[in-house]
Image (cartoon, rainbow, N blue to C red; front, side):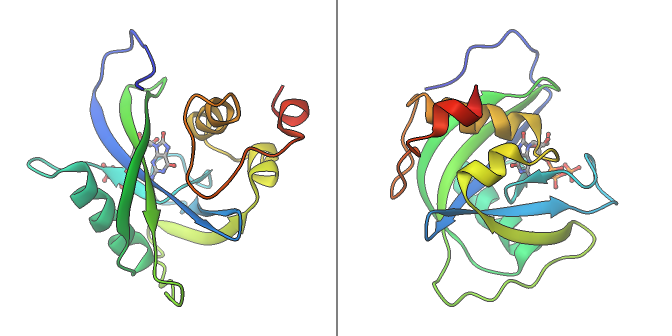
Length: 154
Ligand SMILES: Nc1nc2c([nH]c(=O)n2[C@@H]2O[C@H](COP(=O)(O)OP(=O)(O)OP(=O)(O)O)[C@@H](O)[C@H]2O)c(=O)[nH]1
């Protein structure tokens, strides 16, 4: 379900929500891109003529050097800076070796939702995404909202 917003949309983007053992695959953005050093999910802008899954697979390939598979579309938000973001569940092969494109991605980590939510470098729109998930606005297949979620997200 899209989040209501009056912010004019200037760009469309897609991000991949990738899980392994109840941890989210996160990237730390490089110092060379917008929002340098911020922590978020892999993804990026949708190019003209691309579908969301095509953009998702392309961005993950570019950033992490692996071929992802798009799962279900989880959620849609509009950031405070006018980007319409489609959040997609995505999958990697179990033995996929990440090869980071250093100009875009400084590092990757698998983080629990609790650790991710507390990360001071987390992109604000990703915090909003996690809070909405914790409020059961949508479900992410394969992972349950932690029982202590209300205490840490309040
Ligand atoms: N990659 C990524 N972008 C996100 C996330 N959450 C979120 O709001 N965004 C927003 O989605 C948009 C995509 O950003 P990006 O800078 O990664 O895209 P890009 O590589 O295509 O950049 P470019 O268009 O300057 O080449 C930005 O407005 C960014 O702030 C996220 O988890 N990952």
